Length: 398
Image (cartoon, rainbow, N blue to C red):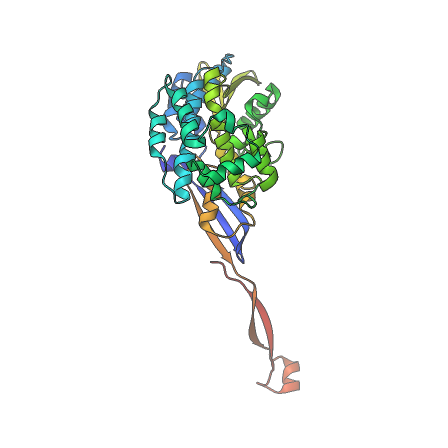
């Protein structure tokens, strides 16, 4: 998609002294799904979804196909699953071996990334297993995943892999960019009733796909929502909080589990539901992506799309009162630090950060002569009215 179609996220921070006192998040992401999809056949809708989204194209295509099929009463959730999971693994690896190292001033591992991107469906599982074992963990995933927090600390101190060295750069104190929003549940936990409610809200409430809520409150989605129960991730959160480091650890943990999932054929990343709504043919599909849950809602009439909605992970994680806003409040008012925290939530569009400096309120003295009314002329004489000094509050925003 072009920047005009994708939109952008604007993050405005208000600085008080040396800390972030307020966060304002504004998105210009247009809700174009209905306009782009209406009148198309299910096949055309799926192809278009895969073409117009520059990130997670496989997930978008699979979600569109599954939503349209569910509207026809077909809830086959296996179509497209391997390609979606391959995309998820590549996105995690890209974040851990390219984006994060560059942000930390270290050299990325482009060789491993290129090997993973060039692998096809037949060779992908073996390529991923080798990357996880040799480049990410430095040991068998089965051994690394059974480490406790002390074992994780030892692995970090050894610094045998790029991710280990990157975690060492985070230090030993509290995590950076901690938020406390609830988690959006994994798809496997969604009931038909829950799915129906989300589909109805997406279709009926104009603002829902822009400002979604989970049971009346913002929620976080992504690898950390799927892995927060794993002992390593849970232990990190209990000791250091749920911040930037926890989110990156969640990606690494999830990536470490994927070779075994490929080997066993355990790939449940797509779920679809046929929804009852005013005698219409409505389908909802959810897909687990690297960034979090992606939903497509399709209404079909006479074999073509009559209404359509897309709810992406970025709308959850960059909600004005959501995970990012909570994570930034109270941090040092440094633009680059705020960007690092935002990157840990991995928006699917570009973003910018602006720091707005609010200085202490000061006082300025002003002189104001009293009006020369009849009383003042009698008491002081003409032209002799006294002046009074008073203070005006001043503030400056830069």
